[in-house]
Length: 66
Image (cartoon, rainbow, N blue to C red; front, top):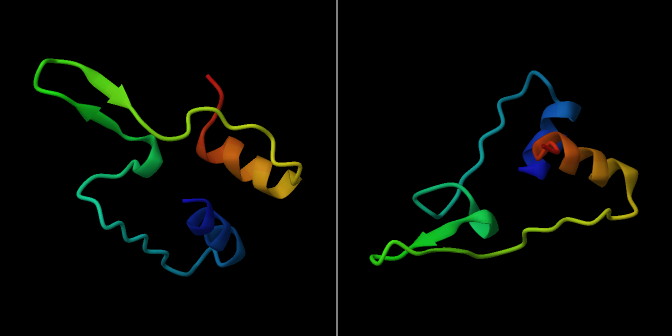
């Protein structure tokens, strides 16, 4: 998503297509629903600053606080 957002900023009039091998979006931010009604969240949940202002700004744009 960050790559697509960056490409959109560089080339605002070009079509950007993102392919995902999964049937649903989410990747590392997905959850697994078990038959017993339990939900397990997997993947990264905390994002620290990267010490790169450009990357940090993209993070904040994709995943706003709140």
